[in-house]
Image (tube, rainbow, N blue to C red; front, top):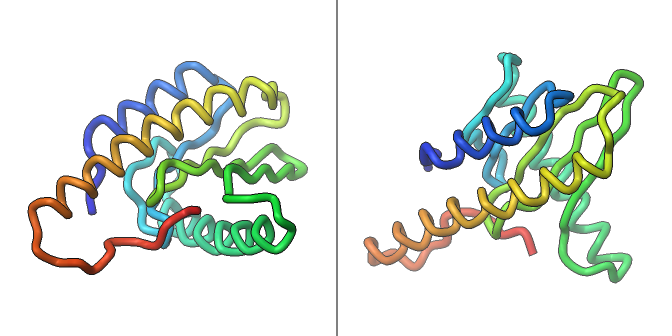
Length: 142
């Protein structure tokens, strides 16, 4: 699946609202890059690692009775990596400088993730309605 221009636009708008972001990536839940707004040439690696982290996070939230996955925040010595659910088939992963306001990061990224989720889920629904296949396209974030 390729990203619609709307997904790229959402990433660009997020980066403009949060200048402390150093990268933004929309990926399928199974680790395929849908769109990126990052100077980093390692988008495929980040998408694959996001899928692995997502798998662990989904299992952890289920095992602890916390419900479906919503977000994951990692703080490193040089900044943050955060992943947000984006509909049923995608995730948004962002990287940010250590000086980012984490509350604002969550607010803006949650909104962007919701919009990306609508775009991706809508595209998948159109694919499903145009095909006779009953095979799901991707795993779902519950």
